[in-house]
Image 1: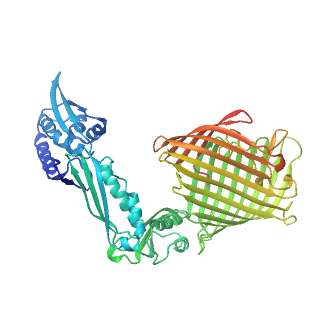
Image 2: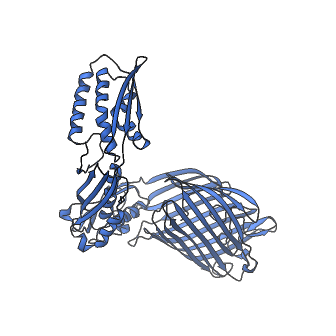
Image 3: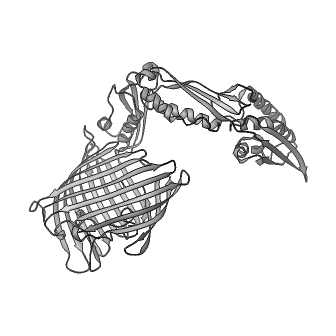
Length: 598
């Protein structure tokens, strides 16, 4: 493609060969290629591309002369044609990077019977964007101007930016995605052009978006249901017939169905036909799990050590889709086993279940055996989780000195979690909050009367494009006139570890009695972390943590920790590697964590 003054280029997508000249060149190349297949001669050649880094990569990857150099079946005629076609093809490739005045030269030499091809490219000045004009047709301007504003804000190219084909395509795609995200599912780009002036090396961009009509959601139709009741999807469906289309709401439906234990995969599609925008059908296609399932896994954490775990589930108890689950987990410092029978979601998306679990932990000279059994009612939505429970606890605590203590409690409790972050896996802004409350009454299957509250929160604050501040806090209290020994140990608190106060051992901050760190009535921890991301996947961090766990607030002692860490956005979630220094204990400890704790 030869750029001329005022030439308008609006490639629908990037191509190594574009336009009429490109198609003719490709056809000629194909013809010569077929004729040359019978040629007995073979050419072995090398290619040296002399070009700035900005264009060398695209030439190496897409220029036929460079790609075919790795083959050993290139005939002399084929090589001759590749050399002849290289300047024109290289020109078109360089233009996709915004260089419309390149100077290209080729040189072929024979060295010791081997062809050596040198392609020299002087790309010239890169084209920059002189202006951007976005316009809209359809009802969006009067019906939902906020959608027009959001689309404009999503546009990624500004005056003065370098013009490249990929950036041009990405900018159009990003803005169109935002326009389609709410109301205007059938939105399209009616017209786009990049008017390039090779004399001034500038490009004037213009895009016209056609919003089309407002879409509303129709009834949900489900396919793929064979084993489990259709009512399960109806009960977790948050959508209402007639509501305005929203991609976030459709994703919420997908998430709610996927979060049940019955479906291996879920695909949700809204028919995007502008002629039928009113109550557009919502199609849900599911692939079900078998009735029986077995899961297992291994892992490691610096707090708990090596881990092996497994679970078995049967998803059709009583032939009514009740889920029976047995699971176990073995860790170096903890062993856990549980059984649970859960009903399918009811008409308000709540899951009722009965469960029992047994846990043994051995931390900091304290061994706790904990039996828990009871009922719970849970509801999980896109941003909120609710849990109502009635649990009976029986704990046995052994320490270095003195006899074991046994404590019991029947605890009605409530828990609430809110997730308000921009990305649930790799959050950069927003917050996560969890609150719990419960109580027990002496003589009602309990050894003491007490009230318990607990809360934790994380706040993510973006700083510029590459930095992030993470603030976190954790607070808890058990309010009772009884001694801590009369309250189940698993309802009390200790601090220290990778997600608490770094620089100290896991749950090593508490009531130290003859080397045994006992759980306490009160807890408060906090931390501040500054992250700098060197690229999309890798970052570094510095942090400061502080906290205490105590039975008597007047005798509290705060522990501080500082340190540095590495951050990796791994395929399975955020991986954090930290090195913390405990100021009070003058100890250095490494930490490894995977995922966001909520």
